[in-house]
Length: 150
Image 1 (cartoon, one colour):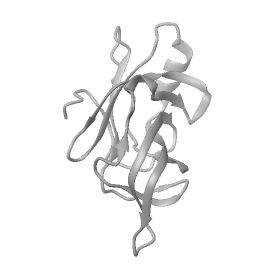
Image 2 (cartoon, helix red, strand yellow; image 1 turned 60 degrees about the vertical axis):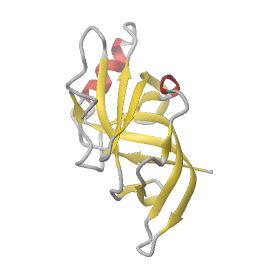
Image 3 (cartoon, helix red, strand yellow; image 1 turned 135 degrees about the vertical axis):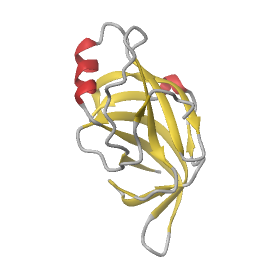
């Protein structure tokens, strides 16, 4: 099993919903190549398994000591994996720091993958462990969104 961190967007995090303290984001475009900690990587649609949304951590810059919140729901759309996250009321400092980050990055454990003829790691099965607010993203296709239904 390989853990990789996949920078997933250059999305502004400006749509945090006030009282509910939630944010919706396209976190992983399907079948799109991005440079990851494992090199060029592409995820096939439906390749990411989420055992329980609330167990997916929302972190700052992949730092497990900087928890912002957790996942509440995920939606597999034809174009991408979309996530909804929430932050507790008493975590104001981390929420504000996340609000200033403009990107999203995904931390997964790769269970099954192959390498295509162009040297791209093609992931066919992975487990989503965390999603991070980051300063330096890779994909333009991922965005903070107002409607998780697309």
